Length: 167
Image 1: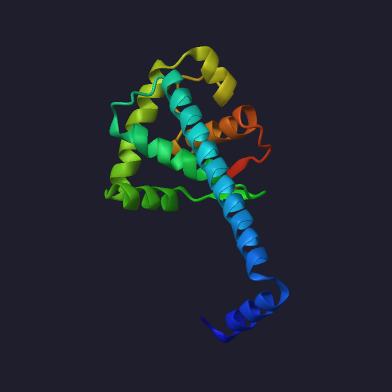
Image 2: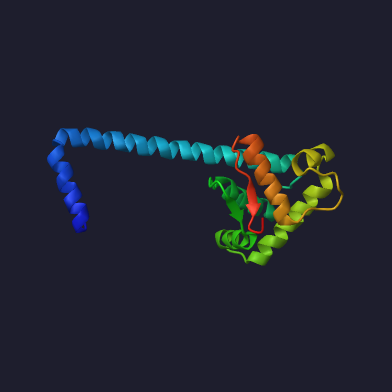
């Protein structure tokens, strides 16, 4: 414990009785636990939404890239900043670290999944989410940004759009 912490602790001890401190600590623990439970519920809901959306877009959960895309989408969606800028090289590196792979492998597996999805998804969903009916596949980063914005704006009600670092 450093000097500032000792001063703070002594000040708190002078202001409260032992019983009051116990009650205060119980309340703090309740708040921390309830906040932790709420974050866990939100993360589970986001994971559920991402999983179901990917499957509805003809992603094959058997492809290894499916988990990489879920991981990257979760990372993007969890950021609550007003001006989010995505650097996909960094996102691929983070995913590579998480899954113990190299970034190029992550990128290639994601590309395979997106290609499969693009070629097999319902045309109406393509128009709704990606604002196109083109047969030409979007780049990985564009595809993922469209998905993350669709999830954040339409499914989670967050009005923050995600941009690439170049926007």
